[in-house]
Amino acid sequence: MAVENILIDRTMKKYGVPEWVKPYVYAYIKSDPLNAVKKGISFIDVKRKKGKISGNTVELPNAIKFDVADVARIVSLFYYGEEESSKIAGIWSKSPHDYESKKYADHFATLEEIEQKHLRAIKNLLDGLGRKVETEPQEVKELFEAIGAITDWKERIVAYNLILKSAYGSTFGNIFYKVFYPVMPEYMRSFGKAFASNEDEVKWGYNEVKRIIASGEVSKEQLKVLFEKLLPLIGVTINANMEIAEKAGIEKEVRLLRDIAIAYPIYTAYEWGIDIDPDKEAHTILASLKGKTNPAKE
Image (cartoon, rainbow, N blue to C red; front, side):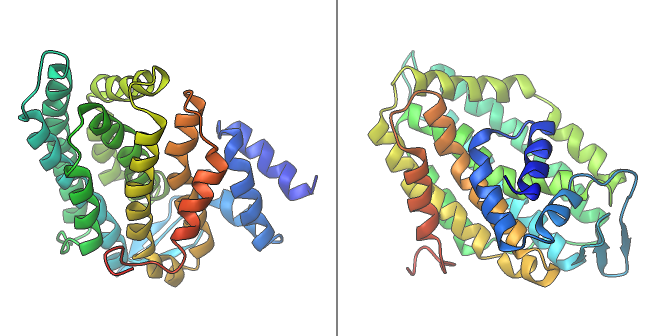
């Protein structure tokens, strides 16, 4: 095994990264064997370095620089994800339901309240940057229109709590928080607190998805339809903002994060018992994203 792969294996073990991620990381290393390991680790192993905001530039602890306008754009994407999620949760909470699905309607009612707390925290972060929420991109609208059109209660739970939160939420929220915390801790602390609250309800949703999938209450065919419909739309949303990564010189790193985020729900469903080939499913969806920036036009 190459030395760089050994280093990555140790790092992945240290941070609890699942085994299925390795091929994605190895491919990333292969693209730039001399610098990839050092550069990739520099985003998470910042030690006591803090980064800084200077004028219109945000500099990470590893010296990667972003325009403040681009950071605001990323935060705006997260904002619209939470806003649209809140709207959908609110609509679903009031949808007609029977005795069995009442727990799902109640769950979405609570999620609507949680998303509103998230929105206030994101808005505070933008205020701290001296920026306003930007115009919602068309690709984001199309993603949430597709999610909002789901009518089956169990499919809603899977789409919202597994697919949306792990693929879109991780890319524009969790990763942003971890990467930018050293630069803006005064804003990120309240940001983090808002997202750490109501964890019990969020955990319930995640565990209910696991139960539904493991028990076969959502079939393999239903899951594949959800994956093939929603994950490409999430991927296109990431692709549409890839020029930010290009300007900062981290396009390869962002593509790696995109691929892992898109693949995560598929591998998770497989680990929970769905009879699919996760490698094949993920490869097919990721291959469909090449060159795509607008799902409605292609």
